[in-house]
Length: 199
Image 1 (cartoon, helix red, strand yellow):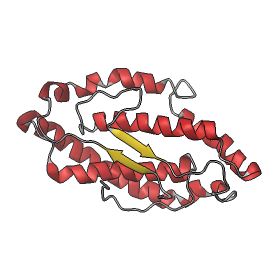
Image 2 (tube, rainbow, N blue to C red; image 1 turned 90 degrees about the vertical axis):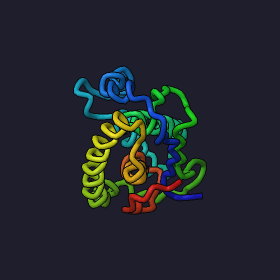
Image 3 (cartoon, helix red, strand yellow; image 1 turned 30 degrees about the vertical axis):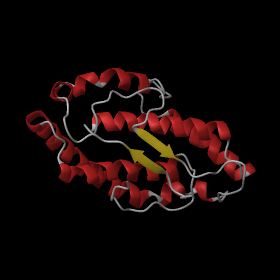
Image 4 (cartoon, rainbow, N blue to C red; image 1 turned 180 degrees about the horizontal axis):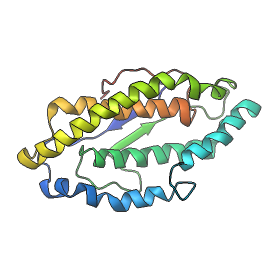
């Protein structure tokens, strides 16, 4: 089993709905409001997943255990965020479900019930991940450009451009690996910088 977060996304590149594509920035508002309720303050700047990183860090450092209830929540919440990303990036016309769906599968490394993680590494992972953040921001910038191109392409041809699909999906997968390493702390394996989408 892989020691990094594995992401399987089901995307739709053909016969796209042009009307929902055109109005996507409006249609996505309800699910964004829903997910914003998981923020810890009024500004919405701090996600509950980030807040849960503190008890995970403490549990790992002092008990060398990853709490199972936080593990389950992190997996479910990451899947929800990915369903929203899939919709926001025009990779599907399927409105994001608040329950599990066949369009997004996140597999976290198995850390429950054993001492599979280094108990001291979580103290510095955020620092070690700085190069990942820098590269990830570049990937996001390119993804935004590809997404704008995809929006126009779907409106005029009804298809998601093939040249953009691997990069956009790869960027989502890249950020899931970074999240697994630096934020939800389910792996000690340093994420690969590759943006190549895995099938």
